[in-house]
Each structure stands twice: as structure tokens, then as C-alpha cells.
Length: 329
Image 1 (cartoon, rainbow, N blue to C red):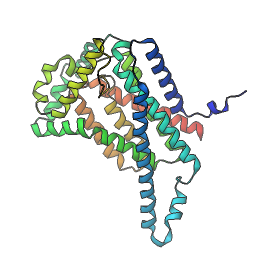
Image 2 (image 1 turned 180 degrees about the vertical axis):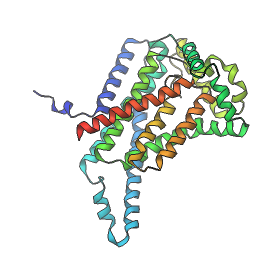
Image 3 (image 1 turned 180 degrees about the horizontal axis):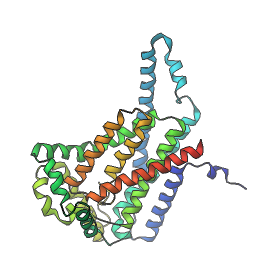
Image 4 (image 1 turned 90 degrees about the vertical axis):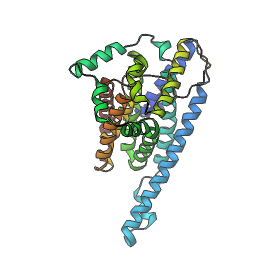
């Protein structure tokens, strides 16, 4: 008997299933006993809201197109041009929601417990790689020379530790709403693959990030970053508790990991896919990519090589997503 249902799974579903199986295996073999299904429900609820907002944005877009064309097109005719009335669209959105929630659950949970999977850290190697890459100069000094004033540092704190989540999920809503059919699926193939490659590198090459290894180097900068400091304190508490065997701690920020910078990767992938929506978005997302690259170094979460690795991961994931788009064509 042929398993026709399995052969019709999208790439992002295969990736999510693999993530979920690895997570289950981890909980079987590790001393951790946690209700990870609660995280699954939490990420599912998050993604249900993302899908709902995507549909609202799509309806608003249809209405705008109808109004712009005036009497030449009614709202119903504009709706018929969209893919919102197709049953497959609704099925795809449900599948995206379920798969992405499973993948994000595995990503968040496994990132927390990386010290139990691979205890060695590679911070000294990444620090040396930065020195080689920058010809002996210090990445923090280079970036802080650009963001020299307390006001600019506070603004970066607000962007990196405050608006990041709004920008990441808001942009995802934009792509899910305005990409159509196979392009929406190809984008999700790339998007989910990006997160999964990032997690795999986190586990293979663990690193905490420079601010957690050499906090004294960032003391002057962090005086102006109240949001960042509060998050970093919680991250340090969570990770140190895990290392000490305290698995009952309440997890809020899901672990420390430096290589690659997924803050940079996620906006890189938005930049690469934005021409399929509007060409002008390239400048918007490209600018955000540069800002988050600088912010990742300024806040001390990442080495310079982490940002470059994030760009590479996004490029590889985009290549994979587009290859699958061509194969489906």
C-alpha cells in the first residue's frame, strides 16, 4: 500500500516532523521531564493569531484594490482574483500553522537544553575568528563608534529588545497574506528550513555570546540598555539553572545561543523574498538587516561572524525554498 498522504507533505512539514521527533527523543533520553505540549499549544495559539491577522490583511488588500479600481471592479470580483476563496489556500494555512508550531516548539525547547546535549562551548574560537576577520580590530569598538551617543544606544536597545518581536511576526503576516499559492509554500519551506538549520548549528557549535563570557566589556554600553539587561539577566538565570540541574525554573526567553544570529537571518530572508511582494520592500528589510546586525554586536549577544553566518543560513534556506518552488512548477 502506497502512503500517498506522506508523499504530498510539503518540505516545511517534513522539517517540522523531524524537529518534533528529535524533541521527543531528547525528553526520553534526558533527565528533563517537562510538559512541552504546553509550549506547543502556546506556539500554536501564536500562529493561529498570525494566520488570522494574515487573512484580515488579505481582505483589506482586496478591498483596497477594489476601491482603487473604482467602478471597474467590485469587491467580489477583486476577491475572486485573490486566492482567498480557494479551498486549498485554507488547507495550506492550517498546515502551515500546525507545522510551524511544532517546529517552533522543538526550536525553543531544545535551545534551552543545549548544555545538556553538547556541553562544550566555542566562544573563544568565535572571538578569535572575529579578530582574524576584522584584521585584529574589535567588532564592539567598530559598532560602538557608529552608535556613540547614549540616545542612539537607547534606540538600538528599544529596537533590538523591544520591537524585534513585533517586526518579525508582523512581517511574517505580510508575507503569508500577500504571497499566493506555491510561492507562499516555497517561502514557508525556506522560512522553516532557516530556523531548523539555525538550531542544528546551535547544537553542533554551542556558544553563549560575548556578553555572557566577558560582561565587563559591555558594562559601559549596557548602562543605556535597560530592556536588554533585563532579558540578559533572565537568560543567564535560565541557562545557569539548567547547567546546575534545576529543571523546574520558569523559562521565559528560551536559552542562549550565538552562532548563527537568527535575528539577522530572519530579516535577511525577508529581504530576499521581498521583491516577490514589492521591490521597495528590499530597502526596508535590507535596512533592518543592517540595524539588527549592528545591534547583535552592540548588545553583546553575538560575534560579527554570527551575523555573517545568519546571512549565509538565510541564503541557503532561500535557495532550498526556491528549488522546491521550481520542482513544484
